[in-house]
Structure formats: structure tokens, C-alpha cells
Image 1: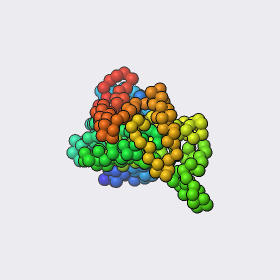
Image 2: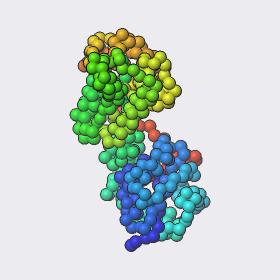
Image 3: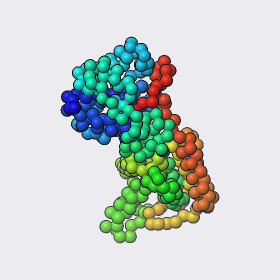
Image 4: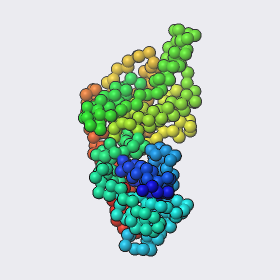
Length: 365
């Protein structure tokens, strides 16, 4: 049967393959579809993000609207039903629907209240064995059922920071390789190179076009350069998180850029500081016992002790969880892997979809 206007309502906490299949079923059966995304305001994933992920997945052919619904859930109370339906109607801007699509038992009552035909899709979860509750409890087990946006949101970001020639690149690359070798979803583990190094190469190459003997000591930096570095580093990190595994490794980040700006220009600008973001874990590579290797792009051997101390001070002061890597390479790698494994074992702490009266919410799609 072909319907005129179809309605889908859910929390989408987070959107997953089951949600997408439901929306696609509605789109295939209707001339137009409105999807109302209605989470509680206390939930961990912002409503705006859910809307952007859904729009990205389904394009302009489906209309998505969002609203916070903080009313209690009680399927046996008609008055509570009235409260929810009023929220949905206001968000949708109409109560004229021909069909209500759902994978939940309450779909029939929801359709009745909209005077529409109920259409149940995969209610037994046979085609898509997944729910929002299951994803929140164990994102790793359901990684293959998440789209790029939710994957990037759930990805644990581990950033290696440190002074020049203390092994940040080596460590980020080695950690990514270690987790890729675990196979399965971990085979997609990625690491993000340092954009500042790439920019240094460009600057030096430009200098050498006129001055072939130019060295890294001749390269100059200004405030805009550090804004560029921080911006590009964040963008590369976000892009890598969309199609990788549940953990992503970075060789420096925008937080580290604040220290590099201070090292070259004497202080950190508000523009760069504003781009610094929390990380799930940072790994600080200690300078002790690591010889300086001049690869033609380095100019700060005399500042390595200062930079290491500066990183240590800022991290200790509260820039997020961190572990310092000391000793030889093998010791550092073992320490780093143990720290990452502890972080992953802790899981994800999302606010449950409980509503103000603390009535238990059902497993949601």
C-alpha cells in the first residue's frame, strides 16, 4: 500500500542500522515522511547531533524535526499519552498523517492517536538485531551497525604529546598497529599524523626555492599559522574517527598546538586556546633517555626539557586524563597499551533515558 504522509517517532539514542531501516521502509511506502526525534533533555547525545546524523544518512527526501520530550513514560496512562502526542504534534507542525511506522508495541496506539494506519517494521528485531539500549550498553559489539557520525562520537581519542624527537609519531603509529592486529572491528584502527610537521615541510620548501641553503631555523611562524595547524589537526582527527575503530590515535592535537605556539611566540593566543579539546587519554613522551635526532625539520633540541615540563604541568593541572611514558621503547609501548586497555574496559558512560519521575524507560529503538 502506498501512503501519502508517513510519521516516524523515536529517541534515536543513538541512530543505528535499525533506525535507518525503519526510516527507509517508511520512505519506500510514502510520498513524504516526517521523522520526529524526541529525546529527553538529560540524555548525553545532543539533539542537534542526532538530527545532523540522520539528515546525513537520508538526505532531503525525509523531513527531520527535533524536540525535547521530558514527560514521564507510562503506556497505561491516557493522560501521559496526551502529553507526549501534544509534543509530537507541535514538533511535526501537523497531526495529519496517513501512516505511523514503528518497531515497538506502542506503535499501534500512537497511530490510533494520530488517526493513522499503524505499520510495524521488524518488531522482533530479526532483520536488525539491535536497539538503542544495546548500543549504549556496548558500542563496540554494535560498531558495524553505526554510521559515521555516531562512530565518531563514540570513538575514544588517544593523543600522544611531547617535545621534539621524543617518539610521539613512533608511539602513535605503533599503537594503531597494535590494535589493528586484534582484527575484527579493530582492524580499522587509525592514527592521525601531525599537521604541524607537514606545514613545516611546506614552509621550508618555499624558502628553499629562493634560498637553497635554508634550514628549519629559518622558518618563521605567526599567529595565523597556529590557528591553521590547530584547525587542520582537529579536522583530520574528526574525519579519521568517522571510519575507524572504537579507538583513534593522534600524533599531537590542538591542545599540543597551544604549547607549540607558546614555544615559538611566547604565549598562547585565545584563538588557538579555543580550539583545544578534551581527549579521552593523552600520553606524554618523556624526554629522558631519548636522543635528539635531527631530521632536517627540527630546531628545538635546547628546548626539549622545557617543553616536556610544560606539557607535564598543563596535564597535571587538569587538561584531562594522561599517562607519562618513560623508559625504553618497549616499556613505553607496554605502558601505553595498558593505559588504553584500561580506558576501553571502563566503557561508555551515557545518561540513561530516564525521565523526571524516574520511571524506567523501555528499550528504545
